[in-house]
Length: 265
Image (cartoon, rainbow, N blue to C red; front, side, top):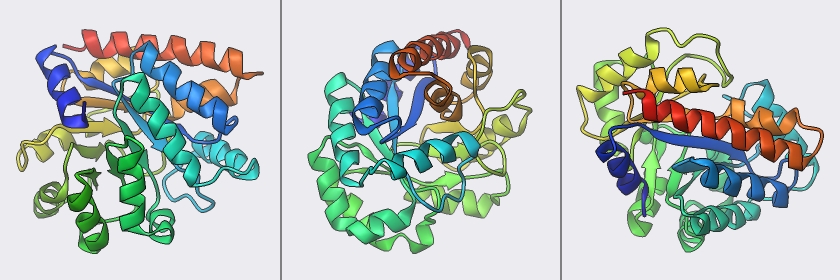
């Protein structure tokens, strides 16, 4: 089942999809894979498989710390394909989230073929704009992978229309300007960008940056097609004394978030 099918199923269930992010390699490659599978079993509908990068642009302190530790422990781009296969086998579509330089170095065509072979559903490219994405657009067309670009509160109507025309799967709406990280209050920025994006596309719109608990998931899930959670999930692992306790905390938070998206409407 692909991303579009999952989002359609969630729509038919009158709820938003729950999208969960974790980086490969923290606390270890094996531990991160187990954590991603745990998320799926606990209620995450779509998994964002993060690729650690030494020079992050959007990552807040929690994700940046986990990525730095993963790199110090020897994670490699190839480990991403191990994770995507495990997520797919667990029953959820995996989306790789990666800065473009890593994919460019691997080779866009080769990365797309390797990802498709490993059961990947597509790629979220936070620092790649459609204007400069020719090689990736061609590679994704050849492999059928989803390509997910970002829109933000600063996007003009013309920009929203241009970016969404190049998306496949869903549109990633950033609710706040700045880096990733849990927030105590959502405000109305997310709802505004969802409404503005829907004026120019029929694609599902998923909201990222800030959700950290079930009440916030319910709030965002009331108007968005998907609720994306990252830092709060990663924190379950960074604050745990060992993998077992981290997985327990992760399972509990995912269950809370899954309940949130189901009561949001």
